[in-house]
Image 1 (cartoon, rainbow, N blue to C red):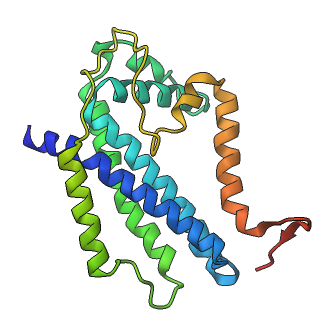
Image 2 (cartoon, helix red, strand yellow; image 1 turned 90 degrees about the vertical axis):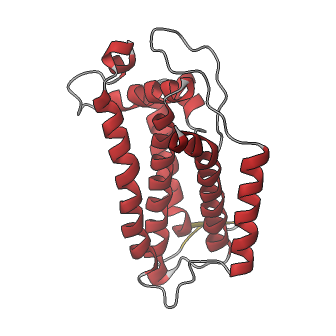
Length: 224
């Protein structure tokens, strides 16, 4: 119980901090033009890191298994059902309470723990070609960040919704726009269109450095 309460209270805030830091780092690298030549490896691996960070955050919501987690799991299953690699419909697994077994939570826990391991591998690739990479912030900045996180967690802790119940239809839930920004789209658009948007956005973000836009000059290809 103590572990779950601590997880519910502190984990969402820590995950949001990671997303903010990753996005700010991405924007900084792009604006400072530090992605050319051999540094393209850092850029592409950074996109992989961002995706892995998003996956582990989404799966982290499943661990609480409240109404928000139920809706996330259902929409994720419907999104993945579009791929012809699954023999049975994944979304049917969340249609009734008796179909949700401990195996699902075991898989969720496995993914939630293994993806961070892959994150460390991707992080090594991310910095391996950079001389003297600076990963940790100065102590004063790190201290201030930790203080702010603890203060916000105490003043406004994250709370869970009602326990998940697959036998009831969820009409409306709150959403974490740091991690769950794709899910309103999953719910409103056809699955094929959601796949087009997600795939297109990822591809565009990956090749963005090679397609630098200059006002009045059209597209400029950066050769590496």
